[in-house]
Image (cartoon, rainbow, N blue to C red; front, side):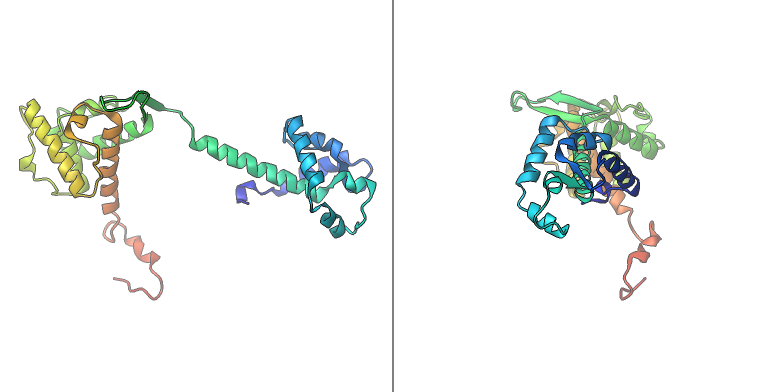
Length: 274
């Protein structure tokens, strides 16, 4: 059971208090008919039908006799056979909490907030095909480009990109920013003389995009199913996917002893230090 699903001391104290209030006879058991009331009192609002299933499973459990033996009640009495002990009730609450934690995690992972859904963007796309673009990625990549390339004289007419990233795809269509991003992540990957920078035509823009794609593959990006025409059309899911790969490679390239001298602290005692 994960730490988040374990009962805290406060929760255990609350369970014991509510259990004692329902256990009016004081014999250490509450009647199974009172199980829903007990669960409600400690914050677990379980539907009646589900509580009935839990009671049936409890009664049918083959370990019931073993539990009675552990409690010193081998033969069982009327109360214990139809009731649930404090220890068992705590275990039940812990199990319900674990289910809640798992459910909450699943909902968080599958959240659809801030997603833009795009239909199939080519003739080859099947009917009903959709692509999802998260707005945070669009904003983050636009901000990264602005902050890292703002001083580049070749990009004065393109930067800054708006904070929300709505202009991102349009401004990447000529391939110039993409080539600059690649050289920022992996310096000298592209010879600056090979980049078309002025008086760009449809042909020279396509040359830049092709150069960017070939160079991104050379530094380790996966460009399967991406071509210059896709980037020229500004297909968001492909542009963001390529940008993320290039930026990630650049970030990993900075994890060196020169930039992160603290890495030496990760060495084992028998490993040599520089």
